[in-house]
Length: 120
Length: 109
Image (cartoon, rainbow over all chains, first blue to last red):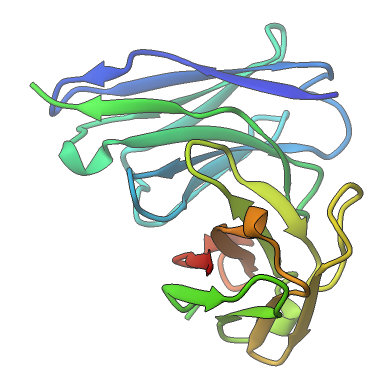
């Protein structure tokens, strides 16, 4: 059973960089054609895809966040990470990490989510 | 446009059938799926590839997909089905980026 766990600061100051890590257990982050995504949800609002990374390091990002977002992977630690720069209050949200088996397959495993608040 | 449009809310009486729609260009070709999210919880996949149901999801959940509209149907709706439902698909015009609908609040009353 694959499990994902987000970790990182719950409070980030405006203009700074939000950094989160997702630790994968119960399976290898490098196995198969899996890809790993970050998804966020402002409190009381809908889901927004941030981007994805393949074990090879290849990435795709939501065009609305491109330029501020970087997703990286550390296969030795079975982790992947999110960095979002120049944050504002609009970036306050619950951030989820999730897995999909392959392109055009759904997200079958999700982390529990972590709330990140942007405030001074 | 890759945008997916859902009604903000749907209401249904217990035991009746609830239908939630999701509309988008060429949605029939974009492998739509549906997630259920209850307050304070992560989303759970209930339908994928438009019509397929993951193991462990009750048979009362079904999906249909044609043209520009995907529909999630819950037959014999139970109070436990009250939740937010999100459709999701891929944007074939943009490296298969992931797109979510705005979500539908299903109220069972």
